[in-house]
Amino acid sequence: MTVSEQLKDVLAQLPAEAFDKDCPTRPVMAQVTGRWGALIIAALAPGPMRFSGLHRHVGGISQKVLSQYLKSMVRYGLVERLVEPTVPPQVSYRLTALGQSLAQQLCALLSWFSANTQELEAAQRRYDAADSPGPVTSG
Image 1 (cartoon, helix red, strand yellow):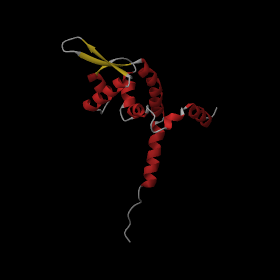
Image 2: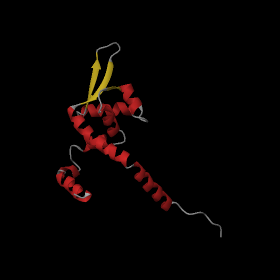
Image 3: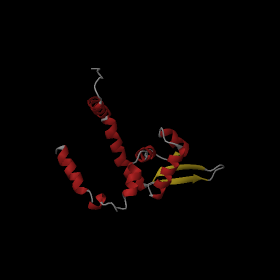
Image 4: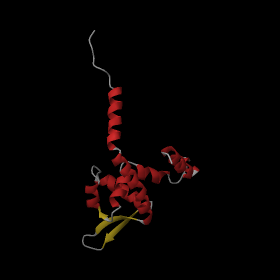
């Protein structure tokens, strides 16, 4: 089966409402596929993590943004917030069963990016070289 045949098969399985502007999964999809969502879910795939560990693991994310993402992922049922009754309380996060099923798909996507990094960077260099103006000459 060629890649385009595989793509046709995948597209045929997409529900029609996925493209509807009123689809109830749009906000979840936007959160998960946004700048940090996939990385947070992938970071939690191996098991529970405390907030500070998650913050260190997902490079470049602010504590405020991480907190906002985690709160919405808990709301969507993808992540569970665990509070241990210690002094002070220790909070960790783990994927729910729903989050784990999503993590399988997202980790495959992240693996694709990793496997194609060189090709993506080469395409960017070619585009940038073709788009940049030539040397300025005086007449």
